[in-house]
Image 1 (cartoon, rainbow, N blue to C red):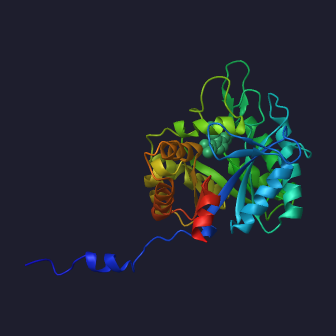
Image 2: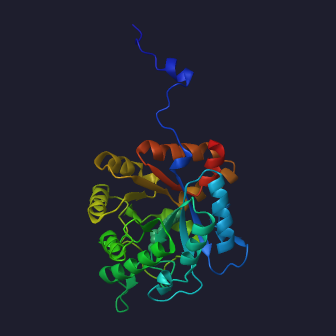
Length: 322
Ligand code: PBG
Ligand code: ZN
């Protein structure tokens, strides 16, 4: 006898859709370059369709994102000068601090998340301070700097700070520094399980954060490890993270799914530059349909269990969801 249930019956009605993308899910990354003047923006060669913005043009970009229904942006700063210790990152007059103050005034219904790391601000391009003797990344001394950056970003008006450097203890250090300054309402979105991925390649040009020596394998996760991601997430939750993150997204759906199953905190997934650029390049060649694959990828991330999706496609999806 033929099976009593024919799955096609409902499928043809298109009545059941388990996963629904919503504009509320998306966070748009925005690169702000202090060397750009006036209303200018600069193309990013490795990420066709993406730009670095001056502060003025970033304000416009964020307003446009808001008008498309996007609720939140993730800001990356590219300072005019870098040094060994990344001191521009906590300068009250630094690019991110000025940009956040402007956005708070001119686009204040948007949730502002600031990337919190050293790599865009250091001459060596690493996410932490470097021991000049052996080139090692110094974990604990870096925590003090991260705390300072967090306080300066929060004072400028950031709603959420997002430490991306994978230093051990960073969430606790940042929470303590914020609380000591009375910044108890500033939330922390931690890049909890950030893998040492080749998919960050195109980002190096976007944020000018390429490193001068070595690699990031002493602080970012080994791509082979899944259980370790759960430990990383658990530690961040204990240290006070409000939102945890898995990064990259599409190659790491198993990790998103495992974190979702195990923990009840809000979960973000970062669909990184390489994910954007792979699809952009192959659709330019005509190998893949940009819109369809974009929607498939983003739906997969949500289906795996992410509450929030950071993606360079945010504006494009927003237009499709309208
Ligand atoms: C650096 C940082 C990186 C990204 C976000 N923050 C790059 C890296 O760790 O090498 C990657 C984002 C992307 O590729 O879109 N702290
Ligand atoms: Zn970094």
